[in-house]
Amino acid sequence: MASDRYIDFVNSDLGRKLVGAVGLPAPARLERWQAGRLRPVEGALLLSTGPLAEQVSNFAPRLTDVLLGAGGEVTGAHPWTAEQNAKIKAVVFDASALLHTSQLSQLREFFQPVLRHLDNSAHVVILSRAPEVQSDPLAASTQQAIEGFSRSLAKEMRNGGTVQLLQVEDGAEDQLEGALRFFLSPKSAFISGQVIRLSVCRQQVQDWTRPLAGRKALVTGAARGIGAAIAETLARDGAEVVLLDVPQAKSDLDALAARLGGQALVLDICAPDAAAQLIEHLPGGLDIVVHNAGITRDKTLANMPADFWDSVLDVNLNAPQVLTQALIDSGALHENGRVILLASISGLAGNRGQTNYTTSKAGLIGYARAMAQALKARGISINAVAPGFIETSMTAHMPFALREAGRRMSSLGQGGQPQDVAEAVAWLGQPGSGAISGQVLRVCGQSVLGA
Figure (cartoon, rainbow, N blue to C red):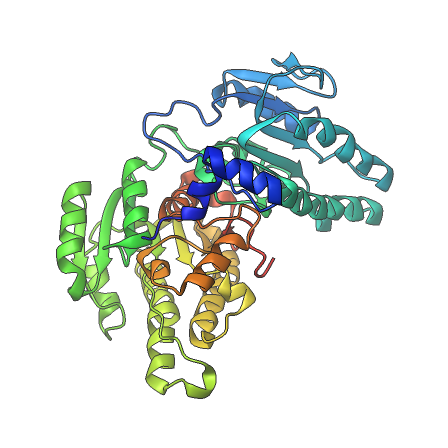
């Protein structure tokens, strides 16, 4: 993978002076999760008042050693004022009780002083209710306004900071801990400006050090790149992994499976009997399915051969649909299973010379949305993860100008790492993440594409 020399430069002593003098963008080095870390938040967590914030205060001591409260009395927290010099690593603001335009001023009053005290790679989460469940049009308007605020605030963050909005349905409050463990930690380093809905889910994580313990996961396209990172992260979190890839990748696949203590499965997912072969090799079934396998065959539509079109649609879209349906129909995908589809922001925004690829990735997003309700009765969730510019061997071979544009055209001003995608997939694979279904989680640093 190509290194990002611009980030290396702007974070050097000379670079900081130069970019400051001429006003160039200065992306920060993002803090990412490291093995051995004990807490999701290593630093101070600032919590506002509010009904959902009160729920958060019950488990906040498990997230951080330093809990601060703002705007009133927060259970278990030390009061915080703008006059204090302590750096804030994470923020949770409860906006669920804002029901009139006049109350929106609380957003400015809370965040304006807080922004000046944020630490590097700070993570902000705003809690709200879904606008469409509000019976009062003014309340619905106010809750919708919070989404616009959160997306704009994310674009104003500095030094690697991120902002997310969690819309919490009634009864889903007990899934806040899992969501905040992810979005307030470095596991979400390359995710910003996202809106995620939490709904009711019966399952809970039993051991936060190994949240996937006792679960079996299949990862397609697992031999290298993002697929290998996903397999490693799932195994780190306690899952037993089955790694699938094409015969050409057998040596890499076998080596990774041996290192992770997993099972290697060589299979062409487009073969007519692929579903039958897969089920045969999974006598005990699965809990997590990650459809990561994908190919590109780029040409403008005017010059695209039929085989370019057909092969991309077969691998990227048809195979995940066929295999998922077969796993569901056969019962090989267990109750309360998790299906994660690797889409792309190009499936949301389009991309010149990739009509076949973007069609396939948009199709995956549509498949996740359409299947969510049908799978709900069995407790199965299905979601799409849409990476943006990720530093892989493929992007390393892009022309310099395109590569630099891809890196800088986001709020975080840089490309992501395969680990960033893997962390999102691992979180969506957790038992409690059944609270999210039929949704798209963009891992793109809040890219301007499709925003």
